Length: 115
Image (cartoon, rainbow, N blue to C red; front, top):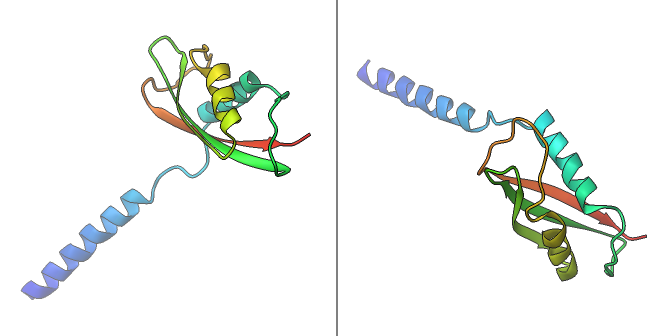
């Protein structure tokens, strides 16, 4: 009987930790959608960057400081010119989205199409 209680306790703890770690939000919230829209509009549509493939992707990591300014932390891209382009366009630009957490690192995927 003691072994059965132990097994049930272990099983309950395992299930609780498993469900708590997989219970993250899968779809982006309204705040992150608004933030993505504003960041993409800041980047613009006209890039004077040459790259080999027809499309390429990048991942932009940034945070919001206490003055509601974007601080670019990292840009993961195969195109080096795009890294500096993003930093020049976004660094210390004000963002007007309510409900954002200051100091939290946000990651936004960006897809770049060749014209």
